[in-house]
Image (tube, rainbow, N blue to C red; front, side, top):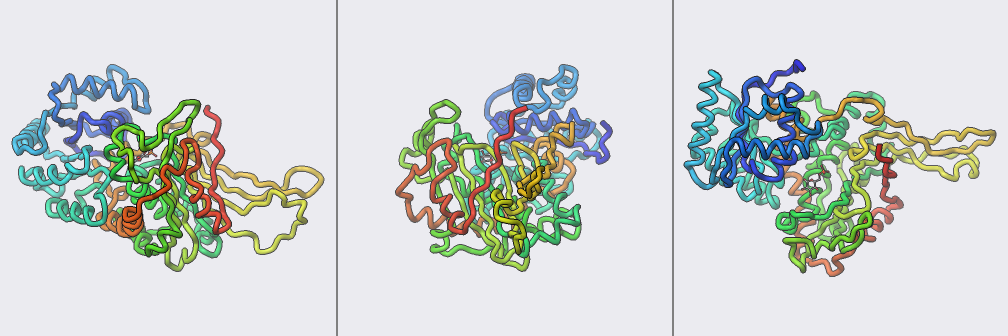
Length: 504
Ligand code: BG6
């Protein structure tokens, strides 16, 4: 394929080259970008890690990963050969200056072979405690001297709280310009999340309705059937607020609540998003009690298999107070959204894996139909389903065919599956391509990360100060603790769930 936008020669250095993220996401994404013609003619991928591998052994491992995790299935030999000759491995100790010198030599060699100064992207797919040391050592080795060529990609979590996020921002901004720093929130790369901007700002019919005059409330629900799996050591120090709400759910909320940007320029878009975070109502300790709910899963059965409770998971403190579920009622205090509640919930080991945003519109001002006609009456809803179903549905009332006047709720649906035949790219493909193109629209700016931490800090500190006495308070395969139902029921609403669509 001859891509319209061309990527420039690039050296892509992956710290954590032997890690899980590289296997599952980064390597398949790079390979699919290659298959789709997005990789530049000259590129090199240097994986780094402590384990001793030859280039060939590293390539072999990545091939296994790609065969297992790539959306395009098993790699064809000819394609793989053409791609893999650009892959290299360097044993490295991230604390040791010599390793960085070695990168420098590697990069210089590519530059001289290609007779061009390539873009240099450092991808930090490592545990967050290594971010500062790697960034500092890159700087000490003078490997970040050209702001036009060098970029750094930082995975989440970005900080553990507001203070540590600020420290990390400070450290990074001492080495890199903001335009070189790509803070990943992979939700922003999802096709359906990007489409929210298109849906809102490429259609004139939405804007007149998109405000407190017509919208009654918004729900953002990201539930997962998976438990904490092998990530207990990280997750037990994080919890659902830090792991999901601070980043993914608040970003989804920003997409719904942001004002139209003046253009699709990265900073224009991010300015409008950070405005939302700044306008969000702050929580007093009393508000936390009324507006935030936490939960932790106990054991149970999921799809016929017995699963342990969170406290029994590997590398989790058996007395852990970490929440695996969180639900929060937010408000955005501005002209567009004043007093419209935004309910957000997320949890692990829930009944369904789905990410859905529901926008419920206000009721009609006056009902003209007889009571028999409207037994299944329901307010209009716009349902944006991010995954697994990728769709947007508008629920409206319509007359059921027949001689009597009976109203039914029907869905007007845009479904990706029914509309497009091409497979959508994975979030990581979009994001990695953007790092090569130098487009920061889908990445978190320093002020966005800090504003999100600032908002949730009162909840985190209130929860930390007071241990939850009823954990575990929901069983696996449920919809979370009862208090989460109460949070929304108090306002006269209930959590919306999409019926699971039949597997095709
Ligand atoms: C990650 C969280 O950022 O997002 C995980 O750390 C979570 O705990 C994951 O499972 C969910 O992502 P997705 O794309 O599967 O919805």
